[in-house]
Amino acid sequence: MRNKTLTFFLFLLPGLFLILVFRYYPFLSAIYHSFTEWNAISSNFIGIGNYIKLFKDTDFWISLKNVFIYVILRIIFITTMSVLGAELIYNIQSEKISYFWRYIFIIPMIIPASVTLLLWKFIYSSFGILNQFLGIVGINTFKAWLGDPSTALIAVSFVGFPFLSSAQFLITISALQNIDKSIIDASKIDGANIIQRIFWIDLRLIKDKIVLIMMLTFIWDFQAAQNFLILTQGGPGRATLVPGLYVYQTAFEYSQFGYSCAIGVIISIIIFIFYNLLNKITSQKEVRR
Image (cartoon, one colour):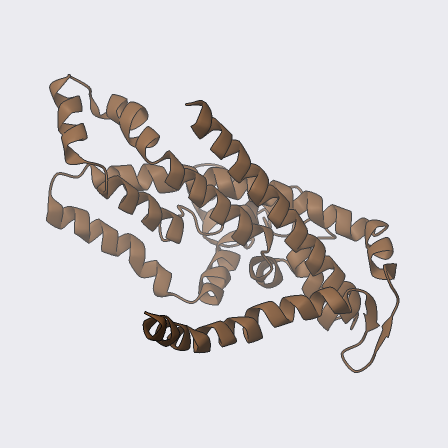
C-alpha cells in the first residue's frame, strides 16, 4: 500500500512542481514586491506605502466602479444567453440537428481572442457594421461606440454576443443532458408544457451549475484586461479603465512594478471575498431547503 501511495505521489510530483513554479511562486512574489518600490531591476522595501497610495488613487477607485458594472452586465448577459441557448438545443428533437448546432456554437472557441476583438472593434467603429445596420432600419447614427464615454463600457460588455461559444454554455448544456430522462417523461405525463418544465424542473435541477457559471464569469471578467487593452486602452478618458488593465499600465507603461503588484493583490482579495460570499449564500439556501 505504501509503495502504491509513493508511486502516485511521484507521478503527481512533476505537476505539483510546475504549479508551484508557475502559479504559486509568481503570486507569492507579487505579495512580497507589493511592499517594495520595484522597477524590475532593484527594489526597496517601503512597507505599506503602495497600499496607502492605492487607497488614495482616484484612478483605482474609478477602475473598480467600472469593473463592477462590467462584471454585473457580463454575468447577466452570459448566464441568460447560456441557459437560453442550451435549452433551445436541448429541446431539439432531432439528435443530428442538435449536434449540428452544438458544433456551430463551439467552433468560434478555436478563433484567437485577439481576432475576435479586432472584429468587434470594426463592428463598433463609426462606419462599422453596427452603424450600417442601424442606418438600414432607419436609425441614422454614426456614433463611435467605443469613443463615447456613455457607451464605451456597455459596448465592451457586449463583446462576444450572443455568448454561446463559451465554457459557460458548455457547462449548461452538459448539465441539462445529465437530467434523468424519467423526470422529463413524468412532467410530460403530468401535462407540463416546455415553458413550465424549464422553469419548474430544468432550472431547479441545474441551479448549482448556474451558480458555477456565475462564479466563473465573475472570476474571469473581474481580471479582464485584454478586451479593454485592444478595444479602448481604458479610454475615452477613464471610462473603461479596469483594475486588470491598470495593473498592466502601471507596470509596463510607468515601470511601477511594486505598485502594480499591490493592485494585483487587492484584485485577488476582492475576488476571494466575493467568491466565498456567493458560495456561502448558495450553501445557506441549500441548507434551508
